[in-house]
Image (cartoon, rainbow, N blue to C red; front, side, top):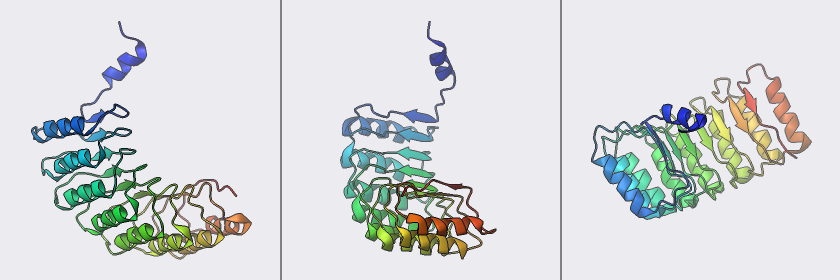
Length: 259
């Protein structure tokens, strides 16, 4: 007889969700999964979690072939910490751009190493009016000012963007990159609702730019801003306070700022 918690888990299992996080999966296992899904056009799988495995770029290419298939039903794909570099990032982006009927809404590439070059390919994807992504997680992906600028430029040039959530935690955008993000938030067509910049070493100058952008855009959709572990100082916090004082401010959640 199984324990109560396990019984509840089994009863609540949904075939639309599949988690294989931390299962020592390599390219071989990834290829088998993708082959199975591609051979089953009636698959109902909506969410696949392969985080903390080792498919590498080769395994990601099999996933890319799956995403390129017009019958693929995946809406959420978690590939955090899967040893993905620029090469794998290129394959994923190429697949999604070539499939106008893609259902993918959420992509997690955190803790990988796409670098600014890989991020530029993601930017080209976001620039595509047919891109369906609503959530993109790029935490700890070695993104600098260059990658940040590419992302912002892509989103500003695509007024039909569906992106609602962008996670750039533990990146190094610098003040210049934060100014690019501020210009994006200032754009009345910007659809972002959640922006995570945790651990991005944002200083007073960057904080002032973000606040100024949000105050100048009464049609902003931003509801959540995470600036945890930044360095705004008292002056930057005063800027945030002035933003919160503005009756047009749309923020519902502002993560605490650490000096």
